[in-house]
Length: 491
Image (cartoon, rainbow, N blue to C red; front, top):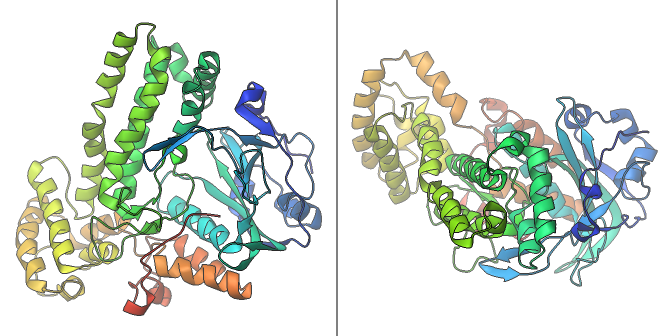
């Protein structure tokens, strides 16, 4: 098969990457192929499903025009700077132009060791591979900007983690894989020309209109701030916790990237943190906006010499943009939050009412997703049939007190019940990738090479805003014995 690769990152100077071919594997088999995404990328599904296609997906052959490389980057991990990280178990295989004329990276995880592996084997366990596949596609269906999963492959080989596990490879597509940590890699080395080349590359690829700005570097900083604010606001509104918001996991394209110890809220607690390596809750649900702000400050530091030759002026310009982040975040988050209760964000009272519900949900251990989803089942004018939501609260009286004020506000909106129901169902999913479901799928894959649960869950999560009563079991919160309190870092 001929794929029309056009590899812009490979045309950057050699300091940006190490060229590297994937390591072959012994007995690959296809777990899942994303037919819809493959077609959108202009890839031949028939080829990808063939023996030759499988050999490419497994890393056993390199297609003409592909220029596999491991990207170099640095990063702040849990607040501590690490000067060299890079793709230790992944390769940027090449870039294609999709059916919408958008450039997309094709990226392979679990492809073998690279010069950035830091002693690792460069491989991936099949459990994290299917977890990331699920997460990518679930988030895309929820409307969240994200990397997408193209394929998952079983390698037929064993990898050793805490115990022997079957190996896997994940293919993903993304708008790009440049991170805040990529800028840090060159800035911390004082490599100004490389830093300038990176900024020019990001502008040309993601924000071409900025090339004509009076100050392109400052304009780049400004747009990344807004994209990040919008992304994190979207995460927060669906109860998503990234789990490891290091600067090397923060994309300058405004996409969710690198699903490791991620999780979704069950019963609402703003301090929820699932990551096994996050001992102090740095990346808990409620801290994600603060951490995004902090990460963006690190990007601003990198861009200072490109913003202005005078360090003081550069700092003033960058800070004027950075200081706007909290306001921009709220401008993105507040409309999402108030829409979840059927109101708009034009009045502070509506925002306060939505925040009050979150406080009551926390006190009463109410499920985040189901509370908002079930509001659509209630009569906006009468509280006679509120059982669907009341039963989620330890003390239902706490919800009743809130609902009085809520209905008073809804009365001003004066919408028909069907209209009200449809509006809430459009923004409040019935199905999310609950942690116990992701664990169940991963366990089946690791323990039995059973991928039927993966396919079943993918089909349900593809339509998260539909009721799907035949799959009601997959919408419920975990039972006590099913709760997942820790998630683990990646592949």
